[in-house]
Length: 487
Image (cartoon, rainbow, N blue to C red):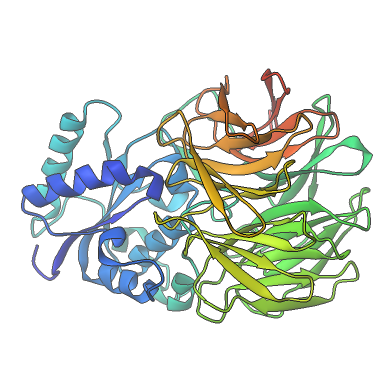
């Protein structure tokens, strides 16, 4: 392919690495040069500029489309940078998924059937793309009228996540469904959820700029957040937690604010001193304050934030830098504990701001949710390694593989039954693990469900968000019922 020394850049979620390994081998056998970040870079290196340069040098950007990929900050930022560079984009549809709006114009190749059929169709399309007059839609066509500087190099550098698992569908501001299902009319993406005052559950909506309230019986109402980002159409409402003051506190990732909402719906917003810091998850701290992660992605810009009930914010830099802090929880020792998906570490921060990090056994850099367990340990998820982990306060780790392959465990919470409960975003399941490591999985009845966050409800049940326009409830015996957010 003339003009580029890399034929194909593959953008993907790490839970799909086995598929990408096979795809890359086959593309190379067909004569194409490829670039996949897990081969060219090792954990802990300064790799964001390397990825940026790889996109610049590549002729075609292939996006492997799965629910985790569409929920990935990393994939979103790679797409945005490809658009800014006017690259050709090709979608590989591996699983039915909610797809980002900016990907609508691009050609898609289905890999839902036989792999050999998908590969044959892909190679045929690549031959067309290699011609001097490509028949494939180019990014330049998509961005007509859009100033190239609208996607700055800075906006590219701040995105380094693959999960979120979690809590990271903050970039899903406009989406559609590749394969129509019963939810084709959905226009809500419930993201985070927490127990709140009045015996209700409160949740955030990633695209409609609202905070939702659901009663234990399933009655739902939603409240609008005042700040609107005119460029994005929303403010990227992300994490939410109950505060020590009886209010709910939430993060606004695109607006760079922390929000407070009273039980009767009055909202106050507080700007974070660090610009473009991308606040993510938030939790009620042991010191009467709220603590949150800041996900900017630089050597001195990844931080843990603390906000008092009166709105005073203090930020603490994570010393090692480039960590990708994600989920955060209060531990049994009176400290805050957080996951770092970019370095495979779990961090601990004292209420006074002293940080220490603990390494997880060698593997892909991808940690998800974290919670305090009923056994006095920390429990966390590993989406790329398909495991749930347990860590003692001294840093001793034990991991438990999940029965369902490539299920991508995401958020995790403690239940009133003394077990841990977690979402499996790539398998449409809710998992339960005992403190001794016995795992049982429960399938969600709804077609194409995308379970994201999870919490223990005031009614004794477990509640979770389904990005497919639903809030789910599972009893401790495993009975699941889902409630539609927007009929």
